[in-house]
Length: 407
Image (cartoon, rainbow, N blue to C red; front, side, top):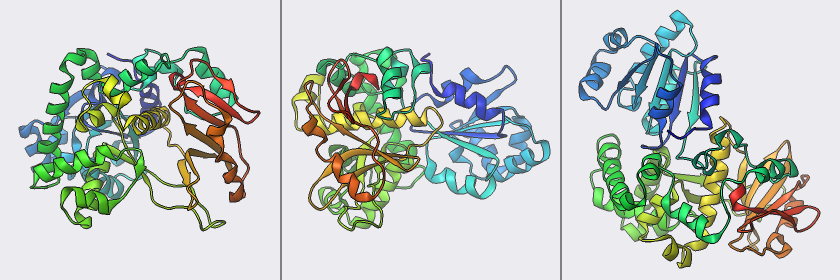
């Protein structure tokens, strides 16, 4: 088993909250992690089992009598009616760590959670393996911020080389634990099966989308637009559906953890900032599979090479927060004059810019848009150009070139 950064978070949360909900896409290791963290007193039940699901749906009281806490309930989205009974149980017993829940569909989870378990549940987001977890130094993963303190910590023990071949191999391979354990020879079979399972278990049975072929085309069209501004009309046109359907289907992809929308940074000082979010696929291997790149080398040389590198870096930054139980105040900047900054972090009222460049020899020109943040009326902190260098190097007093392998 891969050591996961979230293990410590789960242990800490379970000492305070009676209910823990671990959400994320299928096959990212949610159940494996909880079983690893569990005590010998924990029991386990999955609602993928149709008999258990039927009991949970039709007789929740009997289900909880049969599976007494502390218990891990896997794929709990199949029985949202359980939440009110869990609430009654935890209000009566008031024990931390009684219920560990997993779910791969926030769409059906969050309504029941917010209505029944508010104040009683800690919600933790999980993605596939981070670069630090793959490199077996999960404990050294700290939330990214382009400061000298973060660079000093990350630079002592990089997660990998920043050589272009190494990085695109990692991008192409993705981050699902089972695939990385079994090796790349089974990659195509794994992703094909993953998509089929997703379509059957989530899209059809849970959400009720009947036209699987059209939804699969939509999934591929979304993957092709990773790292780009979200444009519903283009997505709808490519799949021959209306914009209302495109918005609904994108919501499905978001709630099942396959894509993430990064919001633009703006305030009321300037009206010239674009307010459309950017779309990112959350597993670059799945993204490369859906868009038809059959090797790391063709991916690196192809039309998506810059967007997929930016997607990989975004994903690793997001994991550095989520896998530490935190949520980043992370945005991008773009105005009507086409000045753009890939990532902007706001911490304690200070803005920290970061730009992605597919180069091993970055120059200060890569950070030329950072000065535009001054128009927002907030202090500007350290900036970074995240690139393919092997060692960090200052580009100016305020901007440092940071290797991708530091993430």
